[in-house]
Length: 136
Image 1 (cartoon, rainbow, N blue to C red):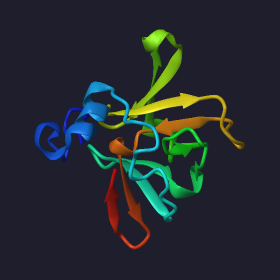
Image 2: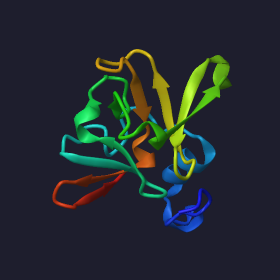
Image 3: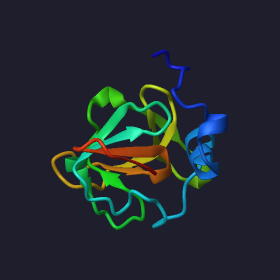
Image 4: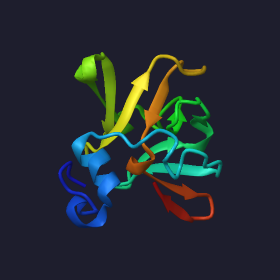
């Protein structure tokens, strides 16, 4: 799939919060996302293009209010961009396939990586081991 092709049309298939997060680099309110407390076994995908992003085994409760992971499925699953907005120096994370905004990564996570991928539920879908899907 080309970088600019998406199985979902952002204008029609995303709700207001999903569009705000993935297309306008927004952030959902803390502790509000559908996938924050998800404990199922499976894979977290990009909501826009369905690319695999995180395995459930790398998810942990960081207490920050958004789903947190300590590593992506593959290094190229995520695109990293310096973000100096809001008077802070952060690293924005985007889908490596379609460039949808996901959240940010911070160097305060658990081992083995020491990283905390802080991801908006509204940018994710989750598919459990039985094939059931939840959209964030």
